[in-house]
Length: 294
Image (cartoon, rainbow, N blue to C red; front, top):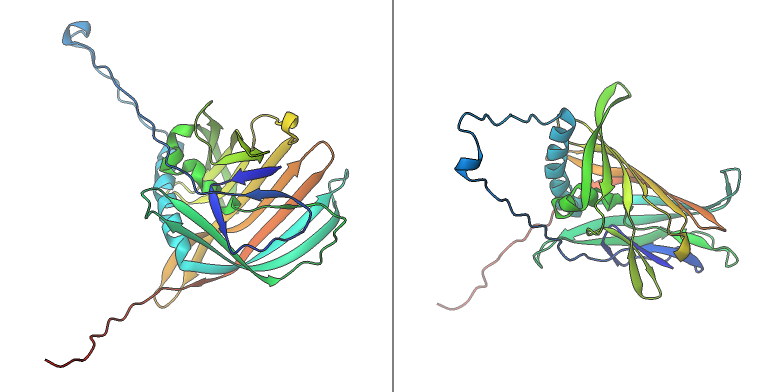
């Protein structure tokens, strides 16, 4: 069983274990949504009828800001590298890890629109490999930092969104937006089994800082069970924060952690990804004119 999640292509990624259930990702083709509007004739509407003014809620206004920021996030992600610490665990019936392995990677996500659509490539170079127990079957999870594709304009028509009130975290008030998949619409997540892809219906909640549109937390889970395919439940929780750089002073909005729980009838896996030590780099090109005879 292979699960394709968050439409990432994997590059230079080192396998964490020999025996594993695998999460990975692929580049996606663009999804287009077209709608047609039918205007009413002048005779069908009374002359004095006033069209009510619909005011968007603060939560939906924040979602509009978040969409713009998500596009910027994928542009800036290519400018940084960081250290990724990964913990893979088998979870017992008591909810605690019965077995775990830890690895460290140099991590980078690259975004490209050269083909006319957004293509994401996740790169990992092993810094510290985990001790491998060949008798254990662990889960490999990739691509969850890009769960923000749920609110990317490409997938705007794939989900319905509604305000979920507000919540105060560490003295800051965030708006919550609930999302649910549109039946039959394109999804950034799918399970691949015997060469066939099965879309994964994901629903969840997004926590957004209303003024900036920054997403600080995103929780997603399967909307329905795929137990007939061997997958019973999946839940992910991703946290984001501002990373500050100097010379020049810039602030990037980046992932800091991701926790993924996956359950089958026989096993429960929990993987924890932590991202730290962000470093910014920029390429400079110097053009020199070759000397020659006049």
